[in-house]
Length: 212
Image (cartoon, rainbow, N blue to C red; front, side, top):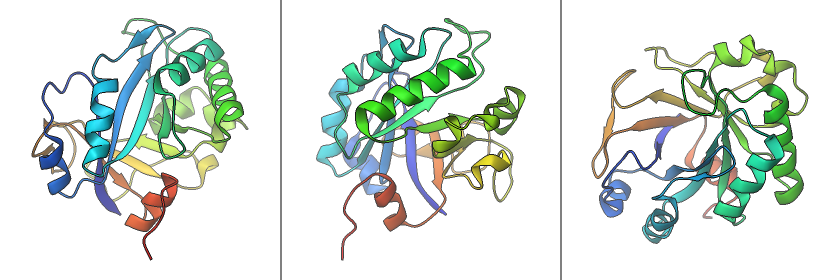
């Protein structure tokens, strides 16, 4: 496994990208959008800063109970993704948050639209229990997505629905809970992620050339 990925949003006030890259962080996901109108205010300014120090860049959309295609259109309009920008749908329990919970059908519509427009399936971020509860593992569409599992238990590997065969990314800490390390110099406490593979494998996932 490779512990070299972080995911952030506007909640991380100050990021020193040179320091982050010097800590061995290779990839960064940043929240881009939520629902059909909301935009993370720090997304567009941080993308060039991250890429200028060589970080692989990813964008995620936080799904809510709104039309899935409309959410996908909003996400793609804001991110205008290049071939080397990795896209993710954050599909989690939002029952106590603004906008409510995205349904499986809305998630399927989102994923299908992104695939139609980009030729790539986005990653799907969630928890094992939530995917199982909603029977999302029965979806022939969602199981085309590579899986990013959130699990903060101190375990060697996260659990995941069998339909995915394996997990690709593991968010093992939210900056407080879960195994150490919780922080990255240049950010502070933050979400950190293990990649299920090598550095070359991570670059291939990101559609980036692998050095020879």
